[in-house]
Length: 359
Image (spheres, helix red, strand yellow):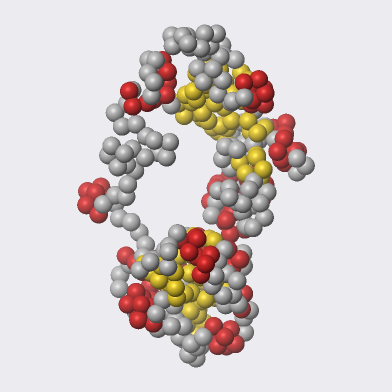
C-alpha cells in the first residue's frame, strides 16, 4: 500500500487516537493523508454493562465484533492472555476521519466457539449461532471485506464541515435519519405491496392452543414429546405426576406491564423479581396479570399457559438461570397435556429475551 500501515498500539501511543490526522499542514483542506490502522486488540476487559456480557460471569468483550478473526500468530494467546490477541481488523483513515473499515472473519468452528466462551456466552446463547458453526464444518474459506464510508470520504475530499452538506438524508450516530423517520417498522400496506408476510404462531389457522403449538414445532422440525395425564392445576401437581425436577418445569406467567401484557418464563422452583423486571422492560408498573386479563389475552385458565408468548404476539422473557437447563417441560394449553423439549430448541423457535429476573 502507498499509505502508511500503522499498528493500533503505535497510533494510540503516538497520537492518542486510532484515527490520526497525518497531514503536514493540519489547516490545509486540500492535503489528503490516508493511512491504515491495523492490529486492533481483539478483546477488551468486559464490564457488567457491556452488550456482550454473558451468563453472569464477565470475561472479555470484542473490541470490534465477535466474528473478527484473531491474528494467526496470536491464536495460542486465546488460552493464556486474550487481551494481547490482535484482531484482523482494518480501518482506512483520512485526515483524522475513518472512511472505511472491515475485518477478516472467523471461518473455523472451534475458534468461533472459543470466542463465544471468552465473552461469557451460555450454552443457550451460543445455540443461537448453531447454524453458523454447522456451516463452518463444511469447509468455509477465509473471507472478509471492507465497508467504505462514501459520505465521510466526500465530506473530507470536498472540504465540507459536516455530512449533511454531501448527502440528502444524513444519519445521526444512532443510525436514524430524522428527515424521513428511518429506519421504522414497515406497515401492513407496505408488506402487502411487497408480498411479504411476517410469520409467527399467532398467524396460524385457528385451532386449540395445543394443536397450534404441536403444528408449529413440527413445522420447525424440532424434537418434542407429548405426555397425556390426569388434570393438574399447579406446578407442584405437574411435577409430582411427571416425576420430574422443579428446575426443568416451566412456570409461564402473564404479567401486566404499564397496561401491556407480557409473558415471563422461569423454572417452577423460582419466584419472580418484579423489581428486576421493571428495569429489564423499562416499564413503570409491572404486576402479575389477573385471571380476567389471562382469559382475555390467551383464552386460557391458570395452570395451563404454555411459555409461548408469540402465540398471542406477546413479548416473551426467559429467565437466564432457567435458560441453562437442558430440558423444559410445560403445560401445552390444557391441564391434561404436557410437552417436553430441549431448552435449546425452545429458545431457537420462540426467540425469547433472556434476562435475570428470578429470586
